[in-house]
Amino acid sequence: MRIRATVAGVSGAIVLSALAVPAAQADDGRSWTPKSGFKAALPAVGDTSKQASDETATSDDPKIISSVVNAGKPIVIGTKVKKTVPFSATATAGAFFGGVRDVATFIWVGRSIDDEDTFGFRPDAKSITCKAVDATTTTCNGTITLDPAQMINSHATSWHVGAYAMTGYTDEFGELSASRVGVQSFSQLTVNASPEPVKKGKIITVTGKLTRANWDTGTYKGYVNQSVQLQFKKKGAKSYTTLRTVKTGSNGILKTTVKATVDGTWRYSFAGKSNTAAVSSAGDYVDVK
Image 1 (tube, helix red, strand yellow):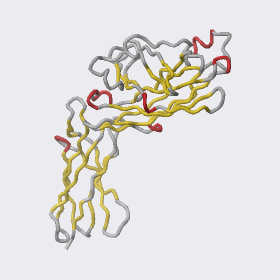
Image 2 (cartoon, rainbow, N blue to C red; image 1 turned 90 degrees about the vertical axis):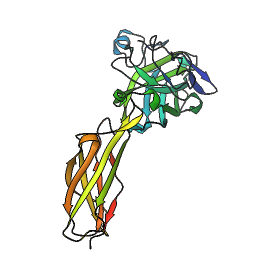
Image 3 (cartoon, rainbow, N blue to C red; image 1 turned 180 degrees about the vertical axis):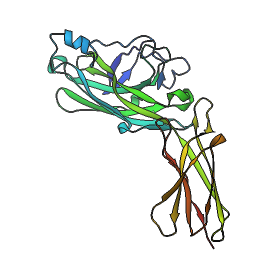
Image 4 (cartoon, one colour; image 1 turned 90 degrees about the horizontal axis):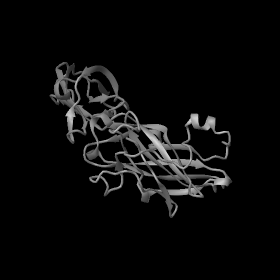
């Protein structure tokens, strides 16, 4: 499927008024399934085949300079709460085009913009504010809100960042993949060290559980066969030391044993993956007698 967009400047903010939105999603105006083709009155920036054949192209032609979502950091999303992240986009167009009126960013995920399974979130229209850098260049800032209720597990991956803009004379232009932003499942990690207190030289059992957001079910599920670090912070110390790596078992369960030597705090720490956020458990203090 293709994506079609008409952008219109209203009170200094961009409105993506013609993105095809399924009926179930139309009310909040934040997400869509692209349906009918990216449409721009001018060639999309980044289309080198068009630019190379256009002998009239100049440095004054409209173009997206930059488009960044969440300051380039991964977007971490749980199972229930919508996540709102900032974006900043800058575009330029020469005096012939009347400069740039508005520019905004959207994100999408899929094998191709033409794929029927392609999915994304548009900017929150009321959030957008714009400021002219000079007579030809404008920067707009705003937010995009992601709703986990509309997402599936395969969406925990790298998303495309697209940008749309409008010149001062209402010509539309844009870029489908200006940059990328990672989207990750929120993760949770617990720890329990026992017995406590414990006699010096006796065995401490350290258990825990690693779970992550499952958008298919709207719940948290155990993350199995993952490497998690067992860490210890001696009483009075400022930082943790990694003692060993423990693999999660069935349902994300962690379990290992250590010998009690000194008072201190135990925790588990997961480094994360491209599709799952890093997390460290709270510490569990054990008094060694």
